[in-house]
Image (cartoon, rainbow over all chains, first blue to last red; front, side):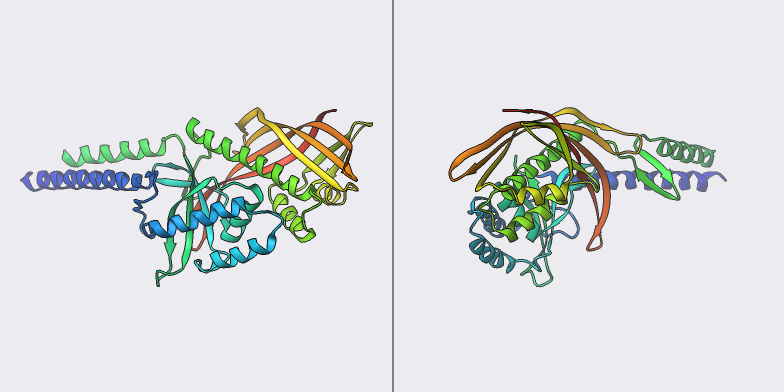
Length: 150
Length: 201
């Protein structure tokens, strides 16, 4: 008489255990975002960083940080060159401060234009690219995520 | 019997989740408390300090007579973004006891208009004198002290110089914004009043 109820209880417990395992697995996948090289990204909508694109952009970032601040014509020309890789000069740039329980906490977001001015004004390039989100055609950058260089 | 055990487990689970530290419930939604663990606080401290260093570089550019006018204006706009509304800055000179207070924008405009051929401004010994501490409204407040070296030259001759010790209040607040449909949780750093605490040669 009580047999079906017992089976039902075991079934529910098994489901709970399965759900718990899945949640734990999910958490460990999210932790991959902590990869210091920024090469392994498991977020649903972020595309893995193209190493060549990353290196090229980082070399541009270094260049802006070292560029003569009074030579604004050259800086502006180089900015126009870099913008070719972006969806727009207002493409958002996020700096990750830390991860907590798989959730990322950022510095105040800025645009790629403001970020390049920041590099040039402060004469430093203290960040590394973690992720780049490309558009549907895979040609233009729609979002940049940075982390502080270790 | 099994149902009763499951029901008890379910209720216990609800109690544990409801009582978990760091989670507060309100208006049908869960809001995470704006607290940081020590490692996270170090990162936010360091970010706030970086904003002060950025400001020191912006001030150097704004004050530099070689900076084109349009560039100086762009940097002023950038520097103003670092400040909370209504913030003021104290300005002192060696020959006057009085410390004048200016709104930040007015201060930058005056800095651009200084009647020297050459102006050199450097900040050094930047450090927290009061660590970021959480206030009852959830924000963090701290104070950073800096030393500013000012040199004004005319016809290649140094005509005025001083070193000023200044205290800068920093406010750090957790905010949320949506960018392209994505919720971005970020720490916003805003600078408050800059107070002169000492002026020396």
